[in-house]
Image (tube, rainbow over all chains, first blue to last red; front, side, top):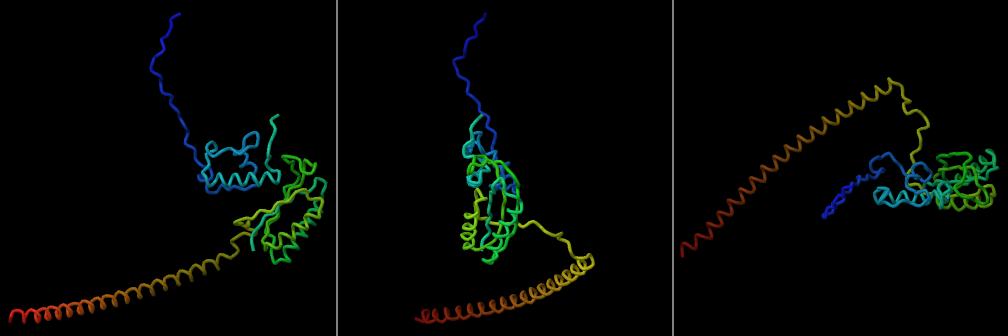
Length: 86
Length: 173
């Protein structure tokens, strides 16, 4: 077995980050309504926690609207406060 | 007067008629406060995401209405006495776009064409008038400018004369 020498210089890690676009800014017809479970479910983890802006890609304004909608939906039991993993 | 949306969750056992009765009584209260019901929506039976009052299913109903704030208290009191309602929630809406109830184009074709013609005529007349006005204005402006020029020239002339007058005694001395 031939041993491969490791290079002393470390290679710089290259990160590729996809530019996130707020989906509500991109589509002017999209609305954030607390009754609409199908749009809100994208902004919640499996456990039912609200996904932060840094991950969801929403702009500040629409993230505020989304959180408000989720909290309203929780009151009426459309969204879960906590959902246990099976 | 503001637009609100009321979400009602009925008990699993309630019938459609009972729900309609409730809607009617709420609509009466809204009418008393000089408001109006804009939209009603029924989702039917739906399972909850968590248990409400030991129930895991219920009927979802939504009611969009326009009323004064005083009506809300009255409605709330009315809902509290009804045991078939598991949960309710008021939400204030910023805007409400009513769905078009009837087809928009109700006019006959001939009428519509006649309207268009009259509108076109009015527009052309208005245009002609405005143009005429603009022209007259422009003329007036040019006149005013000319007058102003004359005035300034006259002033300059007087000034120069006065300067001469002042300078004259100096030279005499």
